[in-house]
Length: 320
Ligand SMILES: C[S@@+](CC[C@H](N)C(=O)[O-])C[C@H]1O[C@@H](n2cnc3c(N)ncnc32)[C@H](O)[C@@H]1O
Image 1 (cartoon, rainbow, N blue to C red):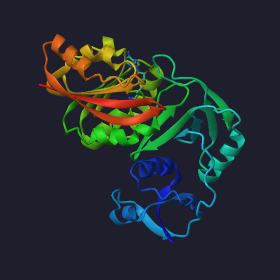
Image 2: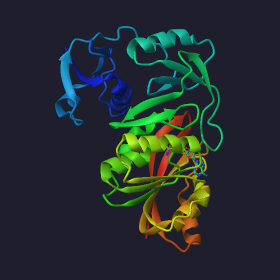
Image 3: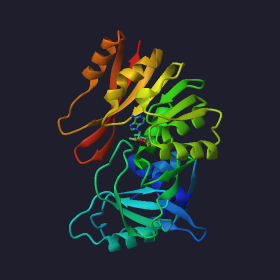
């Protein structure tokens, strides 16, 4: 018998990533779909004993992964859509799609990312491999629902834990600015779990359209205002306790603007991509602060490996 978490299938992939990231996933066993359509995810004993998420843990018989899993293609699951992240020569996607469908029978469409994130909207060019060409889906993360259009709006399911972590730093009643909000995963997680008031800005009208829908379905209408605007033109009268800047390749361009929108003692969470040069941006941030006669200190946290040799780091900047 093995310990397993019983979870609705739509939430299974998010939970599985979280369990893996936190070392709780018992990968030597195969997950199983129950007759009721739920998924049984194998977990290690320490998870079953401490049950930190308060989930339903059962003891069941699960098959062992006898054969070593074939070299897998990296992929993301967003709602019922699977996106393979890069092509590899000689790979038979049909085999991989069949294998994935047998584990995650909720997957309907399979796409291949055929280039890097494009345009200010940061969306990937996608090629349909199998299933219906339907890019709109609902993704469940941290108990919240998000409409995402994988062809028109940015969404990274691997940031689920990061959104939870950041929301844990926010206090009730704070005024928060999410400068590059996308369809709202940071804004909505923060508002829902802390009661903070969030102004969410994005330049992409499709993102704002879905953000408004997401605000509604998650019941945070009174806490979030959505603005379709270029962040550099966003000029509210109020000032913020906290500013989120999730634009890893370009956030520093908007740093001056962000600082001018901060109160005293505000915090900025600046996400930046660290490439091969392993550049540390701390001094650039401090120099921008000095240029505006502000002071503060910066601490850096590793968030995730975005691609081989490309890290995303969060620079938390506490202003004086
Ligand atoms: C990396 S995505 C982050 C989205 C969201 N925070 C998330 O975690 O899913 C960056 C977002 O910034 C938006 N964006 C890019 N340039 C912008 C600008 N100048 N002003 C406002 N939004 C911008 C893009 O449309 C995109 O939705």
